[in-house]
Image (cartoon, rainbow, N blue to C red; front, side, top):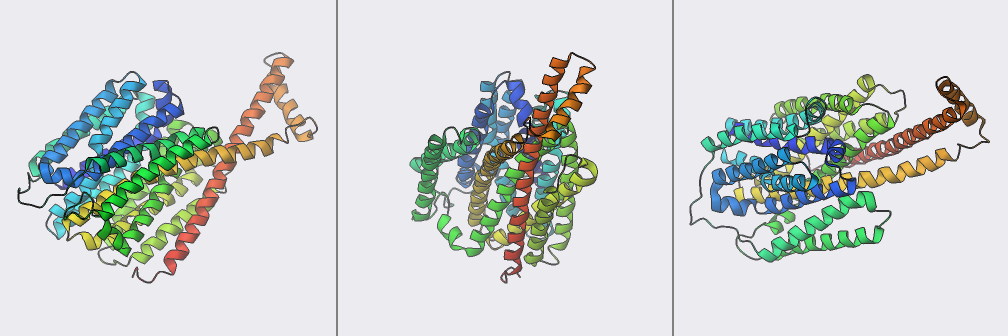
Length: 502
């Protein structure tokens, strides 16, 4: 079972990381705009949220073995469609199918740990879960870049197909079957699920498409977002007020638990930062500093190996020293240092000696905050399988929303700050500015050696314009990393004054 848990986690985070990192080249291969591509992200996350909400309901009726094997089969079919797809419509169908099956992997793997007997074996299951998560996140940028450069984008899904076969083989030998019929089963209602499905899609679509249309269609995006949030609110309000002995999600006892509420807020913040950083960092490194996409993927992955090392350290220390306060303080100090160092970027910054150590700090932040929040949030629920399962389902639903919101806010913020900085820099590109005139003349002289003076002048002007674009993106990135620095300080201070964490 430990192997199954590990494989499910590595499949989940490999596919999420690879597709997210390869979004830009995938758009080019499929011939779609960012607005059209955002539909795949919204649809994937929406079906994942609905499927996650039904996890316990399905397990009670199918048993763990059939549930996981069916989920792997659906995910396998989705990967097969994506692997063989030749246009955007086929890719969209395949990706949404992957969302239906893949939604079971993370929350299912974590809940399966409770099926193991308490003690060393359960701790091994937890290790498999954590190492699958961290290794999947660390490998995904490198693997994505290598497959795109040296093979084809279709091979992203071939890797996942192979891992699915291994996971299915492992799951078929170790997972339990159907639970006894007399067990009390949770109840579902089609109207509630329709509200959740509609609300999830509208909210995520507004967030994703709003990244590109927020300034041109502000009212429309806001209306769609409001409708989506209203539907989601209706679903969770219904779950809280539902008086059935076994509701679809036991929201009221979960939200009455102060530790659970605090933990979910920490998770949401973490996923929000991870989503925004996964968008901002590659943009700044590629378009602001001019590094190649393959280079960014390689060094990004190398930096994220700090998550694997951090997980190993925490798994060693947490059982002996369960005081959560110091781990939270380390996590927030790392994101604070990451934001401070990255806010001092310049055009001459070296990726190996400067940016790589910063990514290492970011990786330590991610694992220390998530692992500690998980231990403190769900520690009291492990003895109640139903509540633990519902808590995991709710947390993973929040993760889908948090990551999508992070990407959307990062995209809107990048457009906003890039425009502001470009306008400020462009004001200095005038005939009255001697520095601009001198630079233009020097660049034009170099190009004039290979072409006539009129063409050389136009090329020199285009070069300066591209330089303005690069500097604008770099300055927008510096604004974002400065914001992370202050978020880290605020988080550090809040955790420092906490007394209950001990």
